[in-house]
Image (cartoon, rainbow, N blue to C red; front, side, top):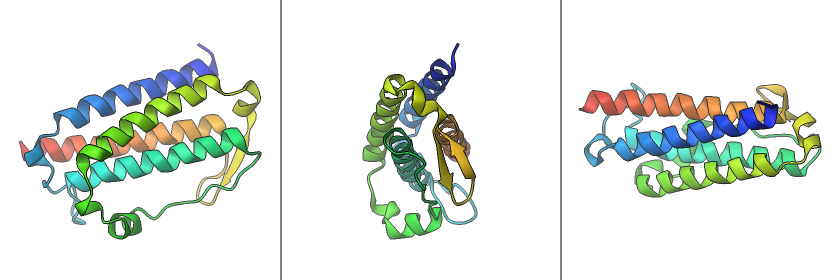
Length: 155
């Protein structure tokens, strides 16, 4: 499998895992504590949607721009500043599904030169286009793991 195929397959696996896991989270589990910092399962689902959107925007910038500067995000400020406890977990699920489907399409359609592009990230330093896709998958998998563990404790 070539690099494009591997990235597309990775995104499709992530999309299927997110869809399946988020569908299994019961309404009663949404208020379950996810960590000692006060995050709840609901907050993690909303955070996942925000994280996927940020990573998806990075992916788009790398397709459209030469060597963009990508912004870092303070997740705790986003949790508080974006009123995460009051946002819809169902809408977050829909956003995750739609953004990941769109990302698959964009990677499938990207010109070959895009795979050689680099961007600058203030935390990661120089990062390649495949590296941005891999970071999207890695971070999303981390959040999904947190959601799964917290929701299981609620059962």
